[in-house]
Image (cartoon, rainbow, N blue to C red; front, side, top):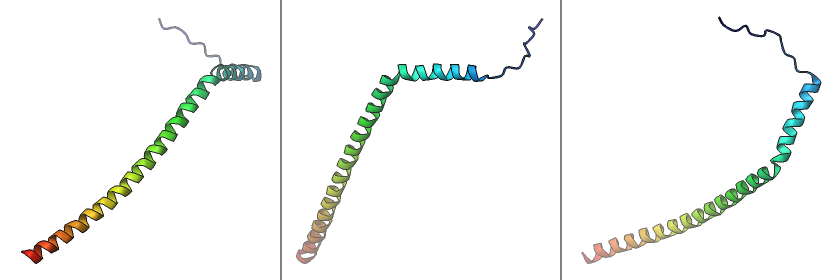
Length: 85
């Protein structure tokens, strides 16, 4: 035989709500140092990401410069081959 469910409706009273809000607040206060540590880690990761991005941008610009020089030299070599050929 199945158990009968308690069909009484439950209401949230102001006192109960405040009690739970205090409990949540206490939980955050207990873990505040952990949140600070996590935030510091996130900031560190963000700074590392920005540095990495800057490094890649500098290398990409250098690569483009080298590619242009190579293309220029290739063109010059082809012209010399045509003249001597």
